Image (tube, rainbow over all chains, first blue to last red; front, side, top):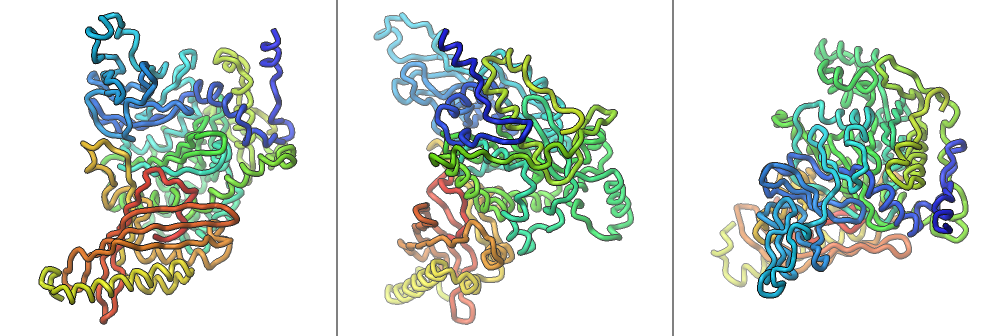
Amino acid sequence: MAATMIARERPQWFDPATGVLDRRIFADAEIYRQELTHIFARAWNFMCHESQLPESGAFFMNYIGEDQVIVVRDRSGKINVLLNSCPHRGNTVCRAEQGRTNSFLCSYHGWNYDLDGRLVAIPGQEAFYRNDVDKNVWGLGRAAQVASYRGFVFATLDPAAPPLEDYLGWVGKLGIDMLAAQGELEVVDGIQKNRLQCNWKLAVDNLYDWYHVKISHGTAIRVGFIGEEGMAPLSQMVILGEYGHGIGGPGVTEAQLHELETRMQNGSAGEPQWYDQFAMRRLDPRLRRELGPVGSRSLGHPNIFPNLWVALTNQVCLRIPRGPFETELWWFTLLPKGMPAEQRREAIYMANHVFGPAGLLEQDDGENWSHSTRGAKGAHSRTLPLNYAMGRGHDRVSHDPSGQNCIETVVNEHAQRWTYQAWQEWMQADSWQELAANHSLPPAGVV
Amino acid sequence: MSALEDLGLHERMLLTFEVEQFLYREASLLDERRLDDWLTLCTDDIHYWMPIRRTTTAKEIDNEFTKPGGMAYFDDDKKTLGMRVQRLKVGRAWAEDPPSRTRHVVTNVRILGIDGNDLSVASNFMLYRTRLNSEEDSWIGRREDVLRRDNGALKLARRHIYLDQTVILAQNMSNLF
């Protein structure tokens, strides 16, 4: 009875009405443990892209929360997500980050698992176990559901999670479509990985943050690596989706797309604009049909809740929690198959130089987030609220006949507020059923 | 220039000494934050590259590093290196303001080969970085450089950096190796 009452207390960490956030959520071991069960174990987590698993036996190691999982294609071509933990003693059965294998052999006592996680051999099964062990029962643990959307493989540990496409909704799908609509993608070999001393949510909320760019990344502008106008507080679009998905960042108008198209047809006569680089790929009518009338005008950053950032550089970045105070960033670069060599070289140059630990932009981010995390630890500082109120009450959701609703405004914090509101709903729900019944629908009217 | 195997011990010692002194001087320019001076030691066609390293099984160890032309932590030409150097001078380069304190320790210097004016040189390094009051990072690895003799003086024409870490255990790599 008492336990039920405690569970029902429903702490309010974030107040959507004021945009005020309790910063203790960035530095609390108990909250972190609850995130592992209430968010990461329930959500559909990005595992890898299908192109990373070209044949049977190909595997890629990832995490669902702190559960290490092996994503592997089996002999039937199916992708399995297996817990990297032998049911005999709990030891790992795979220690490489990626590669190819015929089976997973535990280094402790030699229990051997097939690519689909079935236990196929136990040393001493007859002599020591006297055949008194049921191999059908003692296979590797596995994700409850595994599914792909346009080659992006996701997994959830929760059998009650809705199907992947329902989970993504139109906003999550649009986020992936922004990359996938370019054609069949393949991951460029090499995932950049580095570890920060920050809470994972601070890394996530930053991907929507077009307020910090000129301050944190001003040097990249001043040395001519990126254009100032593209990073300035220009017209912004925010698209909010169920369960915390969102897209936030610059947007262009139909008129601007038309202007760019005319300029291209006239052999680039006319002034270059800040949006050229990213809006160029939105001129393809097939792509615009796929992204829709509003989606094709957004040049923003999607986040697939909880932690997959889809970046305009043809990359996705996972923000993987490694404890309440540590986060790993994993950058995957995805380019269309058959991309002309020169374009491919340029795309890889951008991917290697914008983000990643040595990236000309990203190297200045880490300390902001680690110090924000530290700022949530002090006996006094942790009691002081944080201000996520920019633009609250000043904007309106515009309704598009296509159903692609969005907020068109200046630099703002709508998507960050939406993230923390959704995060709180995930944390308050005791089950998928409860989350599905009680989560907020994307707002209408004034936001 | 003759091939390495044609040189006598004495000539190899002199050449090794010259190479070592170049590497030490270059390291000290980095540690003294004299990056403009460091940049003048680079040839105009320098390739400065740090591939991504992965944990693989012994059987697949040939796939440990990404290949040139693919994803990397550094894949710089002189222009991009110049941006990294310039970045620190224009103000608000937060990762290096306040500046980090670094120390490059360069060891195990070996000349691997001579090809015309190019010397192929391997070295091990430890780069220690501390910043603010108590933050510390260190990287250990191997470098494979090409030093080119240009009007008598050595210049850095290629630096390939092979770190021993796979996951980079640092919030950034805002420094040069």
